[in-house]
Image (cartoon, rainbow, N blue to C red; front, side, top):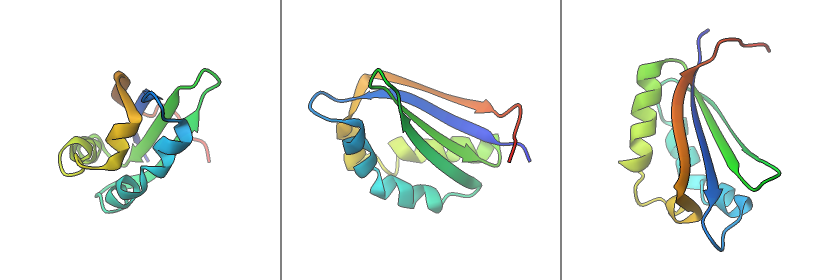
Length: 100
């Protein structure tokens, strides 16, 4: 199966931590579970304080639609206040190799 990954790298907003970001994602998690093609999500922290948020979908069209809803339908989510928006790097990419 081909997976399309939505990979977002960010820093927490001033006064927030990676844990705050994770906790503020409850409504986003519920949103993602409702999205066609959603497969899984992982949020990880780096030693230098960045957060990597990786969401897998079964196709590029499903990934695009799901991602669009984060800033559209979910624009009022509390998660947006926990993000330093100037630090965000967002991309969609296709997995080249998958091992389970």
